[in-house]
Image (cartoon, rainbow, N blue to C red; front, top):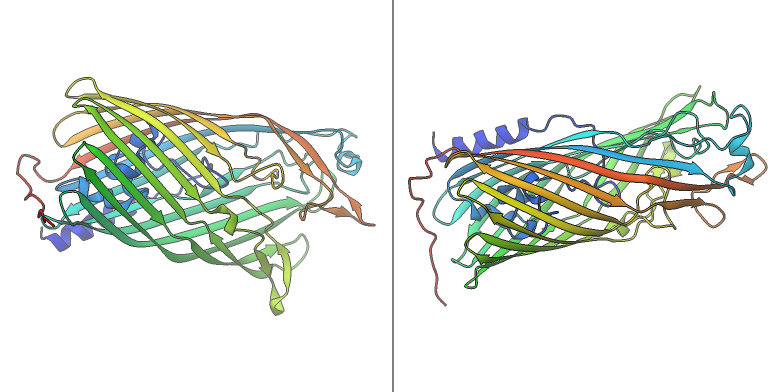
Length: 443
């Protein structure tokens, strides 16, 4: 098989790995961080400097040059989130009137389990050039409260789905510097539902739109003589012109469109070998969630029919981890992270009642042979109880006929997430056949 056919084959294998996933967002807002079982075991510390193996391409495409030969990785994550919304005094009495039996009915568990499949492949074209393909799920969300509850006018089902194909060209410029870049071709789909009335039999209105658009990724990786790896990765914003329909009970569906600019992000990773068997990692991520603002939903005659009121702040993620090669076959890792959520008291809603969170993770790799290895990881996310307070001054405050404000004051409690991930890694060529060393340039 020649180089061109091999590149096409690995691209096809990666694309086939993108089965539809019922996704639960487990990064800030509706982002998904679970793109690597290996990096997850470190709470994603050093993901941009190569701690995730080939899957580090998601955070920094330049890490593709760290894998000689022809390689593929297939990762899958099972996400089990939980959160309950309990309305409190201060909620508009109208939201609790019959036929809701005069009670402030809670949401039940709004979390929905999900599977996130991703894949990565790379092929070394020459001593200094690599081609790679990352097939990932960067955004996703499913929250679904009980159909009848006090906040049904604000949220019933909320769902976000995305698929991303990212071809990458990596170049090892010297023995200490690698660079890479590539286009990111992304499908994005949003479906939002809410009740149109206060009663238990209130029908549902839904808004749905989708789009395919293109952004880019780029990165660099630096290797220092002190066995230190430093990586910096960039993912561009992608603006989706969502086209779809607004469906209201008893009415003809309305064709709509909305421009949604998804955030760009910068990742920095540092990995340091302490001994030949022990490594420590650190990571930092900035995500420009504040660019989302309040996208207008435009209907016929270019008239705004509603808005997607988001108003997030920027998100930040800080992580530390370590891994130890216990034997030639077994590697163990652990990590902790803190995530500063883009969702605050000022913009929290029943659709995404997020808060700051702490990650605790464990992981392991078993090397079956020189060509095949397996990874597993487990993470628990601790999320503090918090509050939703939709009232005067909020742009998303709903009103009843006569201008009566339908305030929603609620406690978000028992919020946590359990994540189990696994990966299969395979090298297609013979690792015993030496790959030509990269060109070393002295300046």
